[in-house]
Image (cartoon, rainbow, N blue to C red; front, side):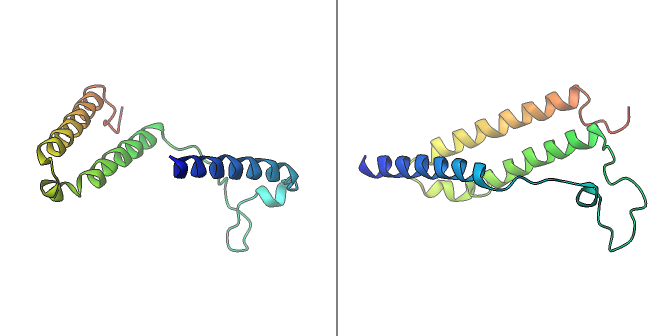
Length: 116
């Protein structure tokens, strides 16, 4: 319990110190030169702040979600070496079913359709 309190106190103190120091740092004053995109010394040919497709953003978020799923399930083959492998496989199956239901929902709602 003493270790938990020590870590909690250090975390709170460090957060408070960083918040206070951030007010003392100089404020950035952006101008046109700092905000313009740098293209290897050439003048920019077009705007660097072009809007991107919302569909692309949705597909990218879905990719990250399912990539995280794979990263979480990679150590699953070593789950049979635990004291309770049945519980481990139960929770892994629950996660897989939940993410599969999410994929089916996105598919039925048309979130994976690239063209409208």
